[in-house]
Length: 418
Image (cartoon, rainbow, N blue to C red; front, top):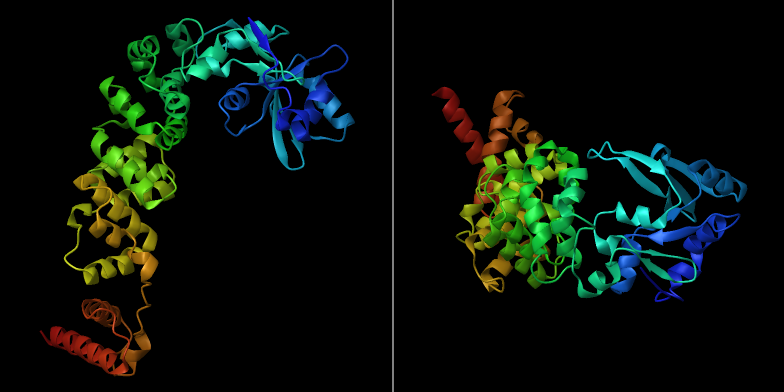
C-alpha cells in the first residue's frame, strides 16, 4: 500500500465545495476522501472533472449532516449509498464505502462497509482505485499511482472477473485507454476483453452509446478504435463494418480545421458508408433523434463531393443548411481519403463561413397575382420556381425573379393542358 502526500495544496482540495464536504464528513469517527477519476486526473495534471467523494458514513448520516449544515441534498442513488450534495450550484457525489457480498454482474449484492481497501478493490482500473484525503495524502492499494504515471490502464485484480461483474468494462477499458493511456492497450486486459466479448450482447444500448460517444472524442480514439477492430469487438457493438481509415482521416481533418471533436461526426466516419448504415447504427446504439438525423444526412450521397463548382456547393448549403452541409462535406473528405490539408476540400468545408444562403424571395402571392388559384398547382409552381432560382445561382433582381415566375407559371399551365 502506498500513502503519499503528493496532492497537498491542490486548490480544489483545500478550498471551495470539496473542502467543505470533506470537513462536513470528517468528524465524529467518520472519514471521507475524494476518489477515482479526480485523483487520477490530478496525478496527470489534468482538470479534476466530476468530484466523487467516498465516506464511511452511512447515507442517512450524510443526509442528516448536509441538512444540518444547510447544504442541498439530492438522493440520486441512496439505495446504493449515493447522495449528491449541491454547493454553489456544483454537484458533489458522495457514496458510502461498499464491498461486494455476492457478485453477478450489474445485480451484485453490495453491503456498506468501512474498509477502504475493499472499496478500492471493487473498482475497475488501478488508476481509478486511488483516493486522497483532505491533507493531500494519496492512498494506493492497487498500484494505481505507478500505472497513472506510466499512463497504463490495467484492471484491478483478475481482468476476467472484473469484466464478468459488468461487461461494459470492456468498452470502458478501451475508452479509458484512449483518454489516458499511451502505447498499445494492456495485453492481459485486451485478451480478457476478447474472452468476454459475448457479454456485450447483454448490455443496454443506452450504456453502450454513452461509452462509445466518449471514446470517439478521446485523445487516443483512433488507436483505441483500431485495437477494438483488430480484437473483433467494435463490429459486434455496431452490428456491421467499422472503417478505421475514414475515422482516422476525420480526426485529422477536424484538427487541421481547428474544430471541436464531434462524436456524431466521428461516429459517421467510423460506421457509415450509406444511409442504411446510419439507420442500423442509430437503432443499435439507440441514438437520439438529433443524432440519428445527423448521421442519416451525412451518409446521404456523400460521394457526390467534390461538387463540380462552387455554385453546386452553394445549392447544397441552401438545401441542407450550414451545419448539415458542413458535416456531409467532412464525411466525404474523410471517406475519399484525400489529404487533410487539401485546399479544395477546405474551401468546400468553409463555404458557409463566407457565404450565407438567401431566402427564396418568391411567394404564393406572386403567383396568385398572376392569376393562379390556390390548390395543388400553387405548391407545384413554387417548387418549379425555387428549382429554377437555384439553378440561376440565387438571383435577387426583380427582372430575373419575374422571368423565373413567368416561366414556372407557363410550365404549370402547359402541363395542366397536357
